[in-house]
Length: 65
Image (cartoon, rainbow, N blue to C red; front, side, top):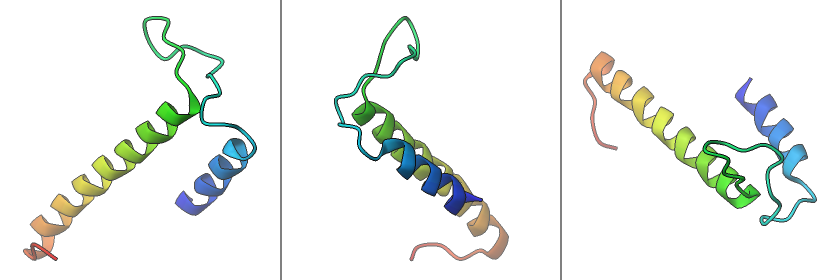
């Protein structure tokens, strides 16, 4: 499912410059650009991967890497 969503986002982003403004505001009327959106997606992905790593460490006791 992740691979399918990634492919979908790549299609949506293709052909758009990083300065393209979002059509809808995210909060307080703020219209962000594609650069902000992609950075936010990368941050959220990293955050969730960190959560999964903590759960894995709790299950198997292995830390570090």
